Length: 284
Image (cartoon, rainbow, N blue to C red; front, side, top):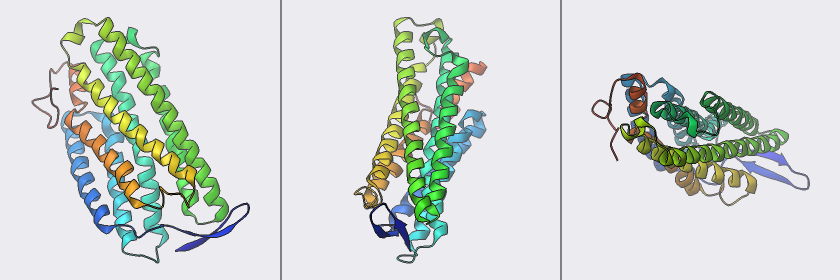
């Protein structure tokens, strides 16, 4: 489907896609995200790790988003608005939900090892500050995606700017989060608490670093994509979506399956080590 876009100096036809969306690629990632999302839901309910609810919702949104792309692939070249909106918004905002759970896990790691002294932000504010930034990013990206999907030229331009702002907010808060985590990690290693020697806190820190870097890279590529505009190189080649969005977000979910935060929650509750109870929680 073509919509008219009015820029300052040029009038151009704007297509929902600059290529024929791949049915095979969409189906592959629907299957991959279904597998990891179902496992996350099972792990969460089995262990009552409720702060992983946003993460699980993000996984479901990834599934729905790629179902939308699969539907669009069957409509080429006469794409309809519904599937385009679904894939555009759901895939755009899902990582913000992943981030919310990651922020909450760090606060629980701090509580687990009783190392509040190692934070440069008070623990009671740690989750609040980063989750609020995440919510702001989520709202900006979702509203921007809705404007862009309208097809109105002014709305498309405004939506593009709002999405870029939302991605920038997400990148800033993620960078600060990584810094906060690294400072905490370094201080605790230098001056460990009694529980540091008993609890496997470092493997959970490593998993947070890995997932944070994956999401950070994904958001950075997305920001560059929108910065290039609708005639840009990245948005015109579907392979970049699959590599820098689908693959990176699937890997982030798999890492959290493998080193599941339920162990942290269990140790805080005094249940002991959960590696024998939660599929995917491993010692490293």
